Length: 483
Image 1 (tube, rainbow, N blue to C red):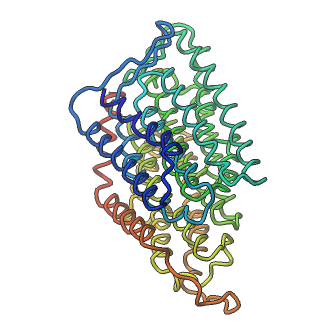
Image 2 (cartoon, rainbow, N blue to C red; image 1 turned 180 degrees about the horizontal axis):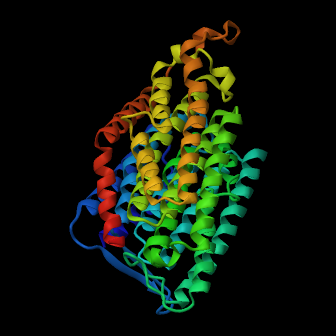
Image 3 (cartoon, helix red, strand yellow; image 1 turned 60 degrees about the vertical axis):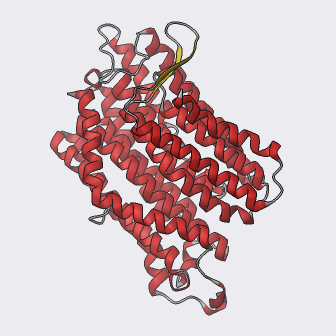
């Protein structure tokens, strides 16, 4: 029952917000932050509880049952959301002061948290699909929040891409259920007959669920969605939606069908090739992009396929490294997007070339950007280095043309990452602000954003110190599947 309470609490709180008609902004912000914090506390109780939480919601047929069950992998996804959502809400209370329709925004923002919780606790492919689509539908109004031509166009692309991907996922769901492979079982189901059909269904599932993870050719919706308010883009690109795509692929490859069924097949090769191509494409596009939020969005496209590449190795350490990068990337990227949002609010600037010298006026903002960016590049001992090192090590250990090629592409991507990160950070600190831009009007944001930056940077440093323990924990989860 606690599992259902955790999921319903933000759905009810968010849904009730427009009807409460809270006049004072301060009271509304307390409601938002307190509601998300309460939900995260409930999630913490759930995560650390030793009791097994399972609940059947409804049954369509014996093959299609909506059931919740929180296992080790689900706790990882839930922990990332529970840790970052209250901080995102705190940041948004200051950011949204400059935006319209604030109450409507926070209503959907809180409700998205509930969809993410229920998604993390799906016990089978059918349940995962329901809350996967709920997550898509609830975030549509957030992407379209500005209601201008750019946001409407971005929403249309977002909807068409993800609903198109959902169609492929639905085919995989029905087909695999027919073969009796719908429930999430550690190690997946061994399917004796119909292996050719199962391979095709797994490929469709990878593309369908991979749409949320922006795998090529379903990538362009992600940079387009950066027109949304920064708390939304941070939510989409770092915490909920994109990680949901990676997590759904994890469930497909390691819990629905046996990884052994896919090892050495054309499906594994195709997944690796698509992941490697997306890594390189996303990095190149990020270097070329001069709009800061879109640059970070292309960076997300690239880094999501780091995770997919790790998962496509279909090994214990590959899964652990892929999920480890999911955890660390969420922390790194939410800081980077929050920095971009603070720059926009304080200066109105979005173009990289216009940020020269601003680091001297906004030292906390650009200091946080530099720290998170260095981690994304893979500078030791920050957490980005840890997950990238595990991915590289497992690729070289696995051997073969595609894993080795993938390891080389990861190194190339790291070089490109250094270019698109440091060409923002270094000129901000070491070049002068153009006097024509008005040197006196830039400063770090207010208290809510500052607190968010400090806490997130402290968490990033802590993740670097204890990152090895995180990977070992994930190895333990993967070991229970593949050993």
